[in-house]
Length: 68
Image 1 (cartoon, rainbow, N blue to C red):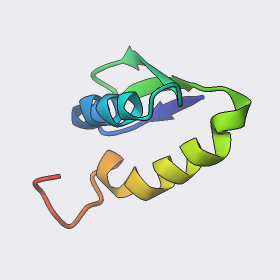
Image 2 (image 1 turned 90 degrees about the horizontal axis):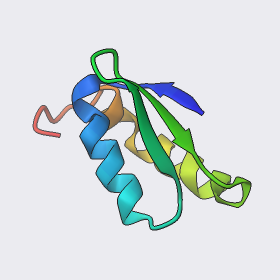
Image 3 (image 1 turned 45 degrees about the vertical axis):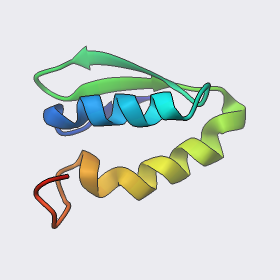
């Protein structure tokens, strides 16, 4: 699943996904544009989509807290 996020948030998403052992694999397609690809088993889709929804403000720089 390709996804475009804030380029400076790629590392954040990578570390979050690594914390969920076996949930998904993140590959960076274009670091400067923030384009990544997330690969995941179908059985993990509900958990992954819930997680992405929860952290979306941080991934897209929509957080009110500039330190996130």
